[in-house]
Image 1: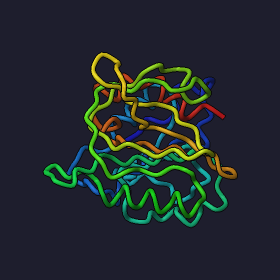
Image 2 (image 1 turned 60 degrees about the horizontal axis):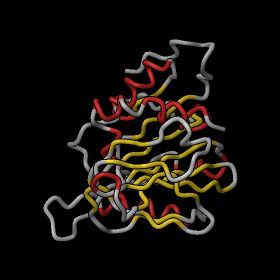
Image 3 (image 1 turned 90 degrees about the vertical axis):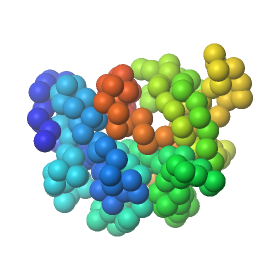
Image 4 (image 1 turned 45 degrees about the horizontal axis):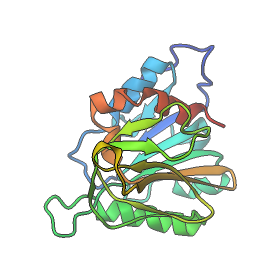
Length: 219
């Protein structure tokens, strides 16, 4: 369970972070508890859906991190009147498998992006890279020049969207593969990520504390 605000002078705890890890394609995999631990350490309040902490009111949150979602969440209809940042995290899809990855969550994310006019799509592919490099420095990437990663799907970034990170080959060599991008549509800043696993492994998540904080604090 989240500890709530540990540093009231640093964050605005109402609204807070919603860690949406139910209705996901990999229910046996680790939850977003590691992300909650990071937010606790940062003094940023968060609610973990798998722990029954969702308030039922989307206006309580300014950041939603939705992991491998493929079942429509109860807050979906409320997006039309919500303002904030929505991180949609899919993952790789190995058609020849196993492992097969998350084709259903990728499809759900793509359908939502199409419906909402978000110019980003997760591709059906399987890329094994260990490091993500910052494509552009802005209010969502200035804290972290690189992120640890792994097997992921590439994403297609349309002209209206902005690529944030790309995965690189051995020793930083090309080709450079898009893996995280954003597109602000109306009052929602959509961020699409092709590697949801980066949010569930405790050590890897802890190394992304500065980025997780920026996802919450950036305007």
